[in-house]
Image (cartoon, rainbow, N blue to C red; front, side, top):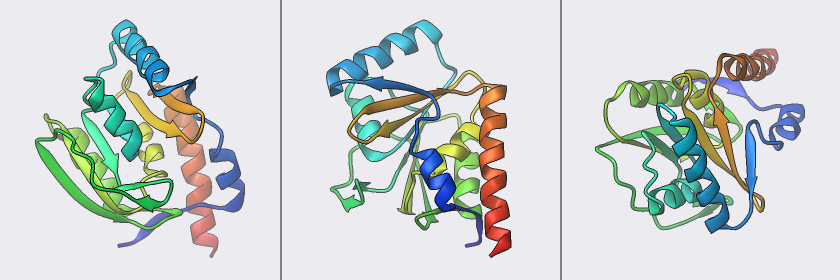
Amino acid sequence: MASVYSLTPELRTKLKKPIGTLIRGSFAETMKRLKDMTEKEKPVAIISVGDTVSKNLAKNHLFPQVSIIDNRVMRKGIQPIPLTAEKTIYTRNPPGTITEEAVAAIQEALKSNCHVRIIVDGEEDLLTLIAILQGPENSFVVYGQPYEGVVVVKVTPEKKTEVAGILKAMESARKAK
């Protein structure tokens, strides 16, 4: 399991800020606004990253093509959430890294023509970057922003370029070690 990318302290600080549109508010408010956005923009796919956001999307009948979860919320283990998925992929991804195995799992999931759940042994947070980079244009990548709401990233060429720059900095940091 080779790590392709490693998080640096500088990038950790940068990535605490939302990469997309932050929808603030209660669970009901954020889900309503997300549903409205989805109806208006009709994304080609929805990719969710995180257990709470994946569960909340499913409760609101917004079924992601790909859900990336680790059975943890705020770093604490939880009961696995029931998600409707036709396929489940298991992968490993230690905290603060992105592994080749996890990248391959996301690529495989995105090629599937069904709902896929990726269960990560480790941490799924940074896989948001890979979901944006690999996701189809005009799809939504949705993740939680702790204590604030949800973040919706519309996948565009500009977003892919932005994320590629972050990943390049992470790759350089790993190679420098």
